[in-house]
Amino acid sequence: MKDPDGKVVLLGDMNVGKTSLLHRYMERRFQDTLSTVGGAFYLKQWGPYHISVWDTAGREQFHGLGSMYCRGAAAVILTYDVNNLQSLLELEDRFLALTDSASADCIFAIVGNKVDLTDECALQPEPEDENRSEKPITSCISTKVQKQVHMDDAIALYKKILKYRMLDEKDVPAAEKMCFETSAKTGYKVDFLFETIFEMVVPIILRQKAEGPPQTVDITNYKPAKRTRSGCCA
Image (tube, rainbow, N blue to C red; front, side, top):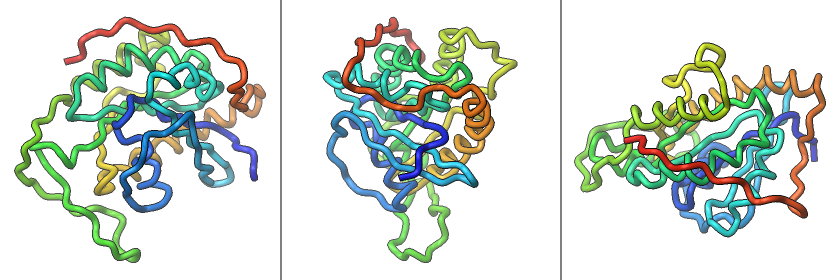
């Protein structure tokens, strides 16, 4: 297997749809999945580069492993469920500290999944035809689920991450470009999410190749990550 040139890691609570997002992008399909145990990854070729995309477990008992998977990461995708405010708060409380082992110039994306379940604008399922257009059909449909997390909440979290990492907003991608809403079930914005991240990761890969940071994941010896205090993003 080709050694990866860079690494992207998905973090987030269980049941927010991290595995489903990866399946939708890499396998072009949606399926109900069991909770991830430990971690798993896909290898994606992007131009001349091979990027490993890691899916991590959201369960509390696997929490400490996250810092190992994040080691040297060029990008971290923090994922929440737009219908579950607590899943957004957990990103700051439980998962942000895991990124301490990521590369110094790691980029962050905040992704709200499951927008197809909201009462604002639901998305029709994609046709089963493999030759179909990749763009899902969208239409506004009344549903029973009221959206709990809005884009402003994700932007507020992104700005907290910059403060946590002691980064200046002028030196990183704008919050509006790094906060996404997706539907793994319909495919809504999933390609856009990953392709945006991959394009931003390429310059980081080039810098990492020059500096030679560690890209391996060692799960035999790790220390539990510290926890950050939860703040209200709503």
